[in-house]
Every structure is written in structure tokens, then in C-alpha cells.
Length: 444
Image 1 (cartoon, helix red, strand yellow):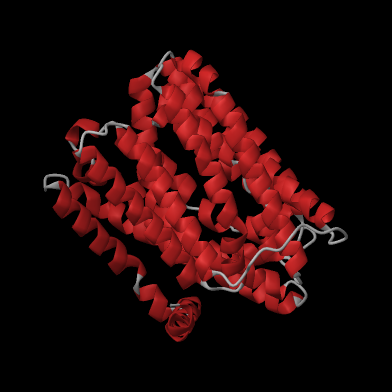
Image 2: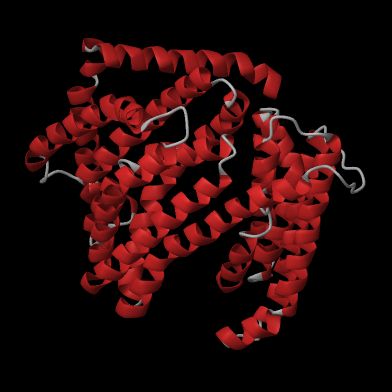
């Protein structure tokens, strides 16, 4: 399953063609345009299904596993299934119907789980995962189709689809280079250091990214359509972007700083003492995670403004620079790659963000002000926890984890009430929660 999904996930980069982002970003989207985008997605889904299914003998030859033939053919149909619901999902996001979108996604995930477990218990072996994947994808697509008000018509001419395809092509190109850069570290470590060191690195990276992605993903999903609506009002756009950036930083930076300090007890408690070698890698990567979520939000800014080409060039510059860092760092093993990745992120930060903000209502100095309070409390909290760390080393991992969290919180939380910036952050958070409470009845 993992062998085949490596092929399928790569093909998935080209399934959307960036057209869902086009549908969300475009200020005025006609039914004819939506219909054309729908059929383009479906055509791409059919093409990818045909290509992957036809290439299944090559997959068998590459891995030397005859079982992969029909597994690859079966999973290739996931492209067609997903393509049918792409524009319906984009329509729900465009209309900010996040409750309906979540219902479809969560329902599909539950069907995948139940189907896979049920078939596995009945001795279907790896096929339980295959059928679970396809059935879950089918349910998600079916619900997106039902819950969305969009009903596709026939293809038509003169709708400006070519221009939308150009915008989508830049998004697809960005996804491609980003996918390559995000997998190059694993490829290099596996090639030069083997499976053991790669296991340590991948465990550290996946464990760190789970909470970070859980914070960043939902905020980006909401912010992108909101920014797209505000793109013709520079003042409102700037205010929304900076407030959201500050919120992302406030949620992610203290978490990353805490991970840096508490890496040993986290790894020992979550993975076990035998995985303690993951801790220094985890700690190093957490320094990169300190700035990544807030800085990465610039992608939503560029897409909402329709600057697809700049979005791609920024991604290409970032990917090339970090890839060079991986090549330099791999000589020192997984910890060398982690250090190179972290250092590279901070070296590239200023020129990358300066170029990204260049033709937008937001400037780099404004970004710096937006993250100043979150980064200050994160550093202060980490310093307080580091001072307490030597006194807690003899206790169990759980006690260390809780104690470090308490010290971290006691160090930085008072700043929310003692400073003007802190009180402003509290006001922003209250406003967001009030908005969420009002919107719940409308979205469910």
C-alpha cells in the first residue's frame, strides 16, 4: 500500500491543476466557468487514472512485487473519484460553508477507517486498506456533491478558462517543487545513511508537524476565501492578514518553543525510551517550526491577490535554497540535515518575504510587528522552562512534561495582562471565538 501510495500521491499533485484555488480566489465566478473547471478536473482525473493504471507493470518491475499490479490499478481510480468532487468542495469553501465541507471530509475518513478495519478482521490483508481508501474517497465525493449547491452543466466557450488555467498552472508548479523539496531530505538520508537514521528523522518530523498542521490548516482554509473577498479593499485586506498572521504566530510559536525545551520527555513519553535519539532532531526542527506557520501564511496572501506567478517564483526560490541546505547538511547525518534545514529557513526568510510582500498591501515591517509579541512570549517561556529543566531531570517524563508546561505558562501568560500588545491579543481571540459561535448554526 505504501509503495503504491508513493506513486498515487505524486500523481495527486496534478489532479487539481490549481483550479479549486482559482474557483475560491476569483471575485466573480459564473456557472459556466464553474462547469468548465469541473469538466477539466474530471478529464485530468480520467487521464491520471489511465496513466497510473497503464504504468502498473512498471511499478511491479521497479519494486519487484507482483502483488502491486492490481493494487496500483485499483488505487488509480481514486483520481477519478476525487476529481468529481473537487469543484463542489471548492464551492463550499468559497461560500464559507466549512461545516458542510468538514462533514464530507470527516465522514469519508470514518468510512475509510470502518471499511479497512472490518475487511482486515476478515482476512482481506492489504486489500482492506485499498478498499478502505476507495470507499472513503467515494463517500467524501458523494457528500460534497450533495451538500454543495453547484450542479455542473456542459462545457462552453468564451468563459475565460484559459486565463484561469494559467493561474492554476503556477499553483501546480509550486506544488511540484514544494513536493520535491519536502521529500529530498528523506531521500538523501535514506540514500547515504540508511533506514535507521531515516526512521529517526521521519519520526521527529512527523511528530512535530502533526500539531503544527492541525493549527495552520484550518486557519488557512478560512482565511484564503476571506482574503480573496477583501482583495479590492487594501486597508481591510491588510488588517485581516496581519491579525490572522498574529493569531497563527500566537498559537504556533509558543508550542514550537515548548517542544524545543521539552523534547526529551515528549519523545520518551510518546515514542518510548528506545527512540530517545529522536529528541535532538525533534528539538532542532522545532526551531524551524517557530517561524514556519506564520511565514508560510504568505502563500494565502499571494493566491488571494491573484499573484500566481509570484507564488511560484517564491516557492521555487525557497525550494532551491533549502534543497542546497539539505545537500550540505546530509554529510552529518539526520541531525546535520535538521540543522541545515533550520538555519536555511532563517537565512531565506527576509529575502523571501520581502519579495513576496513587494506588490501587496502588506510590508515586511508590518509582518515583523505582527509576530513580535508571540515571539517574545515564546522566547521568555522557553528561557523560564530551560532554567527549571535541571531541577526536573530526575522525575518521570510525564512529571517533567507537565512541570515544564506550568513553568512555561507562568513565565509568559502574565504578559498578556501586563502589556498593551498582550491585551490586544486577548481582544482578537475573543472576537474570533464570538464570530465562530455566531457562525456555527449557519454552517451545520
